[in-house]
Image (cartoon, rainbow, N blue to C red; front, side, top):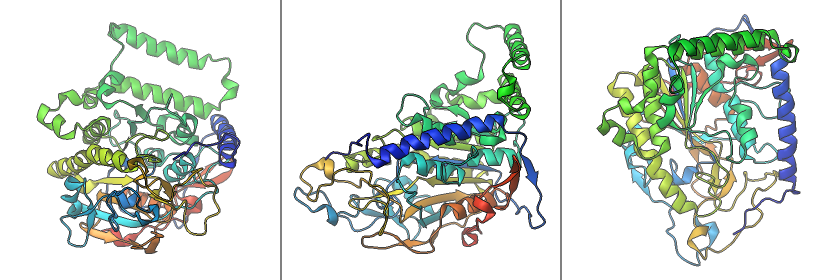
Length: 482
């Protein structure tokens, strides 16, 4: 099975064009002035149901029929038809009578009564079903490329709501390396504060076990020398001969971000970044790998005042959830990496009395299907250059096509109903949403409403309006709230 992409193919050309336009938007962000909050007459912030948000990002396309939306199960058999495969894992019961999920997620099955499962999230095909385009769309709410650098959803929360603790970074990104892992430029494009400025951007912690090193001075550096270095940095920025290449607002935002980092390194809150301070038995419950350790770090950061934390399984082309070959075995491994940490995070937040005010979201850029790319009737470029019709090897067994017609999103805490199943996908292919479809704009409106941010929130940037949900039209799914 060959899924290599021809560099002269339309999708490869589209990717290069996408990068060029993103570069222009990023450059424009550095020249942009101060974004101004617009207080419209119809803008009224909803009562916040949550104070913090943890996004558990299944980067690469988590197949709903292999996780939260099991379908007819067909075990592996040499010679079986690919189109007979809907799920490669059987379903299991959960603590909610009408909710079943896939085998391998037994711990999550025991906490489904603490949250809401949306089975009808949908995405557009965007012309080319590229991970980079869909990840950008999910994280910012806007289809790329845009003429401005769009802020990440975490940056919106940091800017509109401000920090919960003045010392703690309001936006932390855990688990994603931004260099040397494939589509690094596209990943960097949405993992920013966009036009809001550096102070609202993420603190990137690719390796949670090394996070403590990020919040202490370099080894061997005295406190006095560290303080002097911070002062010298400020002087260098003030005297920068290239100041004309960035607006005063953006430069001042950069300075404020550095000052915030300096305060953190001199605070007691920096201990929150050290997961080694947890008892060994607690670390063992989470430690299924880098993602599990990231969930433990996220809990510690939110406990100490972080506003928004994203933890990712990490997107790397053709690895992890990007299951173009060997799908079943890969997803079985991923089940073992995410099941216990997600469940433990929810239980720990509940035990500490924090779950009601912390919204935990489990999501991915799209789902997957064994044979169908996009959704029925799609004219988007097909990302797979070859398809087998009969499974002759175990590596063919699994869901490998990008599917946008029906995706699952799990939400826990943060004011959502407990044990609720919302939406439905068809029982037979095509597995599209057939009840209560939820698009990206409305999903963002739902998350923002839980956090006390109106979906109509508007900023003026360079004389043009920009909204927290596209054109301010997002409508929250009110049925999922208690």
